Amino acid sequence: MRSKRLRVAAVGALMVLAAAVAGCGGNSGNSASDLAVQQSRATANDWPVAGATAATTGPNGPRIGVPDAPLSADNGDGGEMDRLALNTLADLKDYWAAEYAKNFPGKFAPVSKFISWDSTAPQDKSVTFCRSSTYQVVNAAYCSVDDTIGWDRGTLLPLVANKYGKMAVVMVLAHEYGHSIQHMARLNGFLTPGIVLEQQADCFAGVFLHHVADNGAAHFTLNTTDGLNGVLGATVAVRDHDPNNPNNVHGSAFERVTAVQIGWTDGAAGCKTINKKEIQQRRGGLPTTFEDGAKQDQEPVDEGGLEAVKKALSKLYPLPAGPNVVYTGIPKNCPKDTSTEPVSYCPANDTLGVDVPELAKRAGKQPGDHDPLSAVVDGNYNAFLPFISRYMLAVEKNRKQSLTGAATAGLRTVCLAGVVTDKLADKNSSPRLDAGDLDAAVSGLLADGIAAGDVDGKVVPTGYDRLEAFRTGVLDGESACQSHYA
Image (cartoon, rainbow, N blue to C red):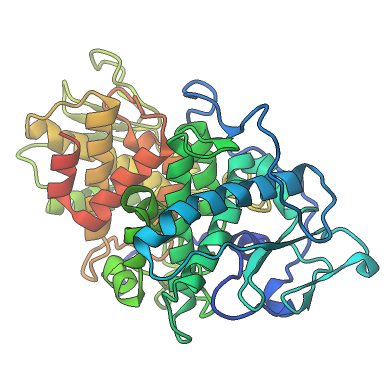
């Protein structure tokens, strides 16, 4: 008898631009078939990042009044998207010129050739990039054949900028420049898997973005609330969508965010550690593909499904008594303002209250999940994770730990929920973590972060911090949660 799984299959087929934003750089040139993707004219919608309105700290995006870089792109039109790309490339050149020798052998040789095209232009207006026609090509990429970086100014860059902010375009170009760095430094061999190349490039992008956030870039600033949240939203959007696709090279949302965070926290030295062995160790026992029948055998978000999760939690973290769970809504008699929708923990009477229909909505189709370049990942783990995190508040209460404080209790709680997530990946667990559950968790944590709330529902505005805490629990275990978020 197959154990129940925790996930509803994620949307992927309609994400026609996913591979495009990630780029196709690396050690070999790109072919036309590598680059071409289906065109889409859907209207871009803003990614609803938490903190985008109320918790912005400082400017974000292109600096006002700074002259454009003295660079040009072949076939460029001199418009906003080309200027945005070229200013990014100028700042990347300055950064890596100063940092390259600190981390790699040899002399830094900046990328000096750039090409811009409009994917909406007629075929007779297309040009050649990396030995392929740019006709209807929605992409940005590094070509090692002639050491060139190219981008689509017609569809791709405007869509990224409109949906996630102009700093997400900076992320795209920083990723492509990362491919040039790994090529220049000869970090990889001919047989290096594509996922290593792509996650190294994500990592190098994270290195540069931290530099920008530290006020080190001439043309850009990046705040760590709405600015960085938007960048991470774009990172989630360009994940590998089908875990069973043998041609996956970019990694899941969880893996891509992890790679960016390695660069952000550890610098270029951390990026050099990303190789096939490191990725395998990082994955550990986490599911990366669907098992037979897993897509159909999903745990429903109803009272029975929540009871199954509670039973698993009780085995992993048994408590002397409780918590009591009521499925008729949020308790109304809990002292203080500890009511958080759609699942709440009341420490006064050690009770979890669940508004089951509202919680179940998080497992269904979410607004924007079919949009091009969407960071929304559907799946029932987006509903189960808040339930798990509220249970972990009961565990923390039993340990006499504080339950208030977004940056302490809130992050510690989602970190412990990450520990549980890792344990649910065990082959003997029932319910059991399934391929894509981590991505659903990442999407929810970035969108509203309720699983990272303290007992009063207070959440840190930085999606980076919420994701970092969850990732710490998944990869580093409970001791790291306790030491990081005391």
